[in-house]
Length: 219
Image (cartoon, rainbow, N blue to C red; front, side, top):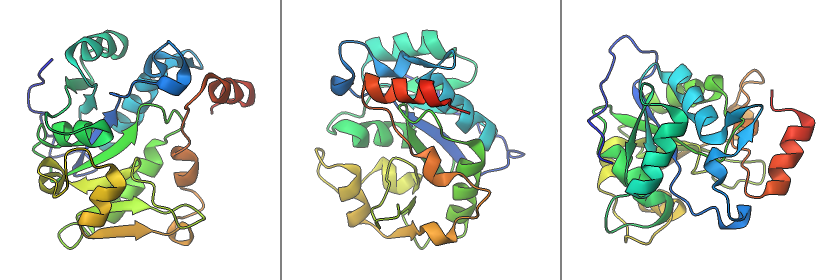
């Protein structure tokens, strides 16, 4: 499914397009597609789309892998708040989705999460984009570090031109992409207490992890 270029709203609070990466095979989740599994009655992909929409005020791009999966996700999410793109040819994994999404936006940047990050908060996305606005031009990407100093590239802001034509091999991962460009890493001590950034990159890989979130409550 080919998306139309995402329309930009000059009055939106953030100069970035939200991107949800949903093209993975969900191998650790079993036979079902985790993107459409539910938490508090909402599919995981829908929760991520809603967070991006609330944070940026713009339509969201969902990178869904192939045509069939894009069609399936579109039925779950609905067409008004998101456009769906297939993976860019010549690339693999999350990079393929990022490249495809970056090529569909007229915004200067894309802010990315995985579809399996159901706790992503609009306030965290909005804050990270605000940081990126001060650094893009000197940096190709802005991503948070966790407490161990590891970058979290699946919750990051990428210069759209850099992401659309990345200087890495097609089978490279997002960490390799960060290493190939200028990356601004955000340390935990830079994040205000009111911004739930670390909680926002919580991801769900297995049914057991989803069950734990259901038991403890997502809100």
